[in-house]
Image 1 (cartoon, rainbow, N blue to C red):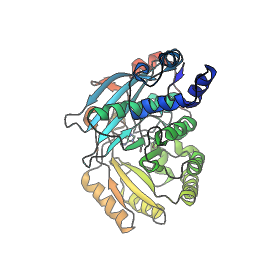
Image 2 (image 1 turned 90 degrees about the vertical axis):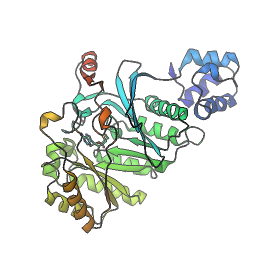
Image 3 (image 1 turned 60 degrees about the vertical axis):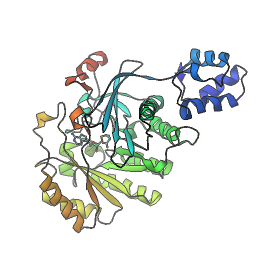
Image 4 (image 1 turned 60 degrees about the horizontal axis):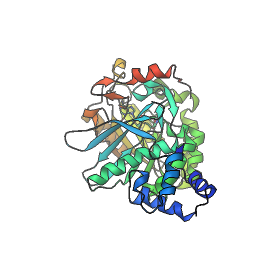
Length: 364
Ligand code: SAH
């Protein structure tokens, strides 16, 4: 069985069974434009082709375990089960401006083990396939269509480190942007990385128009090492030489995410160091107040106060660096940044998943 999103395989299947190639165009239209929900609904196809597809392909690689929308209707969190029983999450964010964004997962779990992140506590479960990434998007597209809404932006900021699953993430971006398929604009897709330096350069060459966000979170090696183990492999100077090459290739502004943890990342001298680091670079800083999540509270972390965040921003202003504070969405349904830890109704599913998984790895 292969996925309905696997164009090459579907075309080979059609050809091997003596069908014309144009049949694929009908399939493509039905899935991505008419949003049909099963093979039988593709009424432009003869029954024999529908049967052939049913026998050989899966229409959706994910099944919905549960979904939850916050009381204001801004955020919907989906919890999905893969065919082999792994669980992943995706979150729709409906902005007041009318734009709708989907936060997708690229891995089940995550190997990066950032100290503040709930997903990091799970370890890596496995990489997702491109079809599993696209199917998160398809669920969201269908869900929004019922509300007469459209998906406009995708951020690869759910579970996992997208640049460690580069091949599948790349395929999913191609499908999302393909005019005949989901037809989203390259510029409205953002991939977020904790800083896998060599892949940042590949990404610049392969996707010069897709946006890049770097989870920087600290302005020097010593401070970063305490919260992000990736710093041991790609220290700040290595990361920034990749970033400078990225900007040279793409001429695009990078979004830097900076988590505000009281007494850990929010020292005022760090604001100055951050200013020095970014002042000559094409940058926009996004401050994310720390979201407490499952398993992260044991560190004793607390979010930085609004007043302190303002001071940080003022310092960056003086360096001429634009910044915004990320409006926390979805924290009441455990769907905010760093809270994707397979939790449902306050109950952790991670242990349940862990049991079926055996050991997880924490290697990069
Ligand atoms: N692995 C990718 C994408 C995943 S997370 C990356 O590191 O960029 C998306 C963002 O949420 C990252 O910037 C991440 O550092 C941040 N984040 C993780 N845990 C958080 C928490 N508890 N509070 C606030 N932001 C968090």
